[in-house]
Image (tube, rainbow, N blue to C red):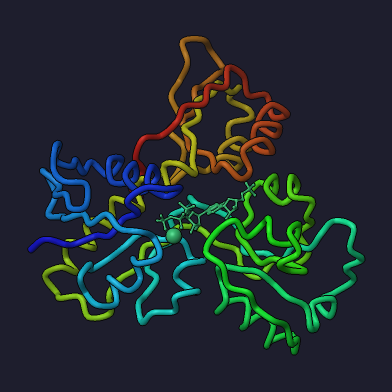
Length: 284
Ligand code: PRT
Ligand code: ZN
């Protein structure tokens, strides 16, 4: 039984979505049409769609699962389940106003005109803050609307902030933090669930490997205990004797988030010859 996954056809999520499949060891067929593909070594069919359509296709069970930004998931608010966060496509949905405006708080938006491609999420935010404003829905180039007098503020996706900056805008409120997620149809069959579990297992291994680095170092025997506490690894570090008396070599993994702090305390505790290597897959 083949699982059907919907991915963005082209755009910002395309590369990362297709690479995650590749890193999961799933190879697609060459030369198939651009809308439908099939893995050659995993029971998976791939549908390539516009990102905005993915939640609907998953709700309707045309696709069983899909990869799409949370911004799209929450804006379309279809009856589907988010099953995994994928760590790419990170951005935020924010309110921005012209840089010279005196924006103190959300009450600035009262009775203003706001341009957006996210009318549902914007309305929800305004309601929560008891603000009445006019929502001007447009499908693209939201950031130019204030400059041409179409709106007083915008609500759009931001990642680096350079688009806002080059259009004379400043970010004033973050409505939603978003990243790409795996979504699932709520009534997926047990057979397909088994395939999905296999896929999720591989995705987790790929995600974990990206968060950790493999670390090798030399340490004097008297500091071994302390160093083992600093990098306890998955179960415990591997300790091997070195060719010279009084030293050993230690192998472990270290989390990316506290990487530099860990390295500093390792050095303070006499570690030498520290080597760091990427991990390709990690299965706990
Ligand atoms: O054709 P299709 O409908 O499939 O694609 P699309 O044009 O609607 O979407 P696309 O490919 O632009 O984005 C797909 C998804 O990527 C979005 O739904 C988000 O989940 C995610 N994402 C991450 C972003 C950004 N970062 C992003 N920066 N989507 C859009 N932007 C745009 C933003 O709208 C603004 O115009 O980039 C500009 C701001 O970027 P900075 O870096 O200048 O702040
Ligand atoms: Zn889109």
